[in-house]
Length: 250
Image (cartoon, rainbow, N blue to C red; front, side):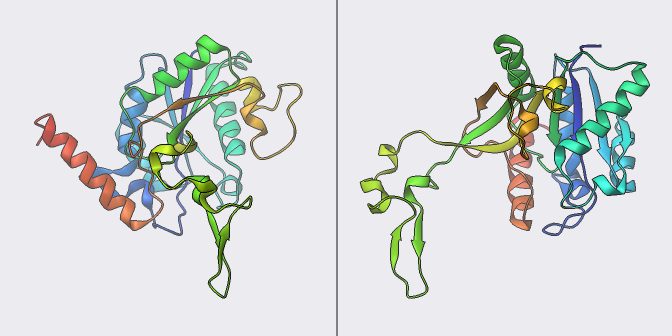
């Protein structure tokens, strides 16, 4: 089956924000917003949640989503993301009765990202289909947190450029900085072949599962919010409540 598969990753453990994947955000469990984003996709029809947490699994099932029980060894804070996704894909393939085609797109969404632009999943999938890329990841402009403006400050308070010889590369207006982007956590799509490390010529490493041909979609600055700290919950809650008011939702 070559239908795109969405795997929502929702590990129970979190040091920064305990139980963040089911923390309340705008009146709903955080994961519910990611499930909504997956279901909005026109191109991807099958959605599963991979989790080791009973509360997370219960929240997913309450929304009618299939659940993959993630083994404990794949649910630590050092467990590689790609291993958890491969486990989920294998489980789904057992349900489907066979191994998926090598070019089946696997959409990876994080449950702790309640705020994403509408249609993001299909934008990434469309680019993969059109370009034939091994992976497509979403990015955001870095804004004023630009690498050209990074500096080193030593114990005596002396300031020097992070790299090169000239502080700030001689640029002091944000508008004059060259375009630069950072992965924003909104979406990652990989072909099954890449996910299972079957693309020739890819050097080993933590991102080898991205494959060789990589593409990106760019989101507006601030349009993706992932929950890494308590302040992120406040920001996401405010954004989603404001959006609900804008469309007249109670």
